[in-house]
Amino acid sequence: MTPDFLITSLIVVASPGTGVLLTLAAGLSQGARASAVTAFGCTLGIVPHMAAAVLGLAALMHTSAVAFQGLKILGVLYLLYMAWATLKEQGALNVEADGTKHSAGRMILRAVLVNVLNPKLSIFFLAFLPQFVSDADPQPLARMLELSGVFMALTFAVFVVYGLFAAAVRDQVVSRPRVIAWMRRSFAAAFAALGVKLALAER
Image 1: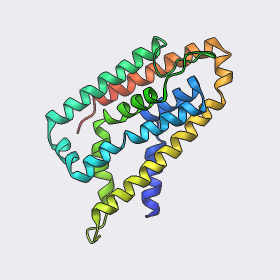
Image 2: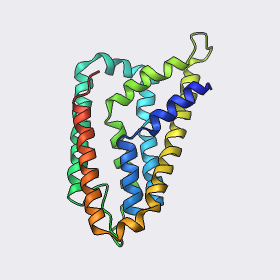
Image 3: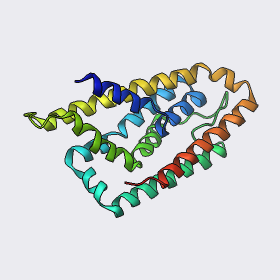
């Protein structure tokens, strides 16, 4: 395990994206436990992309315009749905002091979908992981799985930190309706912006 891999992975994981946004929203809306569950779901959402990269399916995604565009469209639609639901107080940021709690299964499913429906993540694994696997490595598959596991562990740890921070300021947010309204609009706009960014993404 090289320091370059750890540093690069940490930068990628910590960069704001859909997973970070969803985890922050969970922490603000339902507290520390919900943010940890969401972080776990986001981490699980990495598994299909990791499997695709290891099995070479990501290469097909990279070369097939139809496959890439199909998954991209689904991802864009889901992000726009998240934006709409958040704005309508039914989505990721439903901050109420005594609001109905979402089940762990629902939170995990939503987090998994956010990452699964992002084709850029598969291509990231295809381009990123092989750089840290030597041609002379006697077990390249095992090495890829090891690096993927480390990346997933970093993802979970960093997202939990984001979520705990959000949960720590939750009481201050809940007690200020104007702040809730502003944050709801901000999160909805952020989901929409990420959807537009994905729509404009090229292979």
